[in-house]
Image (cartoon, rainbow, N blue to C red; front, side, top):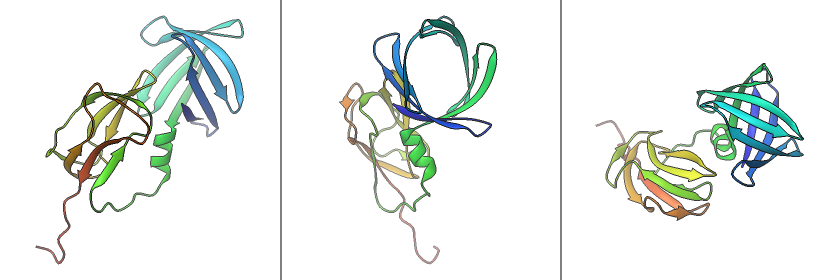
Length: 177
């Protein structure tokens, strides 16, 4: 998975992360690839070995996609956007008309479905939780409306582009009442 990672000072880097085995990862930062062994040694503490050097890394989630990371005593305030989040934040908000199809941006496993057909939702409501690369991703409703179709089941594996659910916004009435 690729991420755009930026520090609050403004420097942005492209970071790729591929899990090779349970504790082994291939990390690519701006085109430079390294092999990393990583093991969780506490609730937010990780032991990282890269090129024979060991580092203790403390990660504290600060909010949506935000992290405070301490490496070798140095604090970094990071913001990380995956490809999907980057596309969503970069695009102008369209005016939704008609049923809105929500498709999987990545292959994964449906962990939970939070609503059923006929449930009213507001924009940003969590509808499906999809696990990909051992991370749970909450798939949210893009608009206010009614869930008119759910095309997956809990435990189901889906491919990228698979239809997850459909939300139909309320019809706008012309001329007021």
